[in-house]
Length: 184
Length: 83
Image 1 (spheres, rainbow over the protein chains, first blue to last red):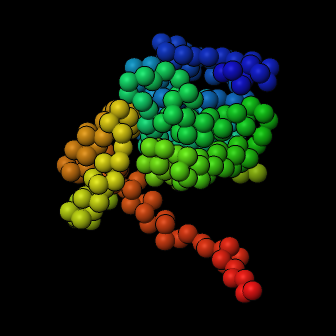
Image 2: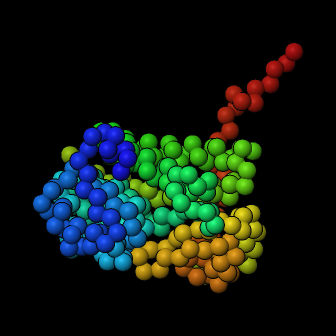
Image 3: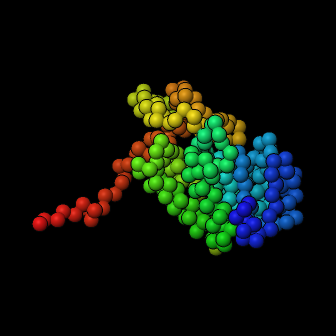
């Protein structure tokens, strides 16, 4: 959100109870945003919103036509992502498997300030950051991959402290992040 | 990954690796129908039970360990200088 404001983008933030299927469909159909960023639970044929209601699935994927979509939602990249592009979206970036992360159980507030969550969220947020800067979906995906690799390298050194165990899980998210683009 | 492919050696290996996770850290995993927040102890139980989440945890470790064999060693880094 901060990054979007920094780049002077007009934002429609459908947070918490606003992330219902009805409201999401209404906004997408009326505003036709160029960039849609989704953050919620998911499975291979749906992305969930408030109370895990399916806000995007195979039946309404067409409402993302002409948009570039980034979905931090488990497994949506396995089937739904391709359908979203088939129905006219410019691109879909998401995950073919569960997006997983770690955090400090005792004192978790901001994922970017949590030592254990930061590698996961900084790397995945890079997709959105790069898209907001005007990069293409492929460039944004590659930027995110570079961030994952940077963290793997960093956590492979003695400076990692007790965080080296994160490496296989960071690699997991990176390996299953996909970028699906429209045929040109 | 099928249950047949997960033998006790693999489970023991993964459990040992999970032992390196600090006790105050939790993992968030799972999809829209089955999402969980797991302590390291919870993760070990899931692995030993070969649950869906346990199998995913096993897969993360095996995928990483298998990737180590593909590490490329740059010969330039190991140049020997004869004086």
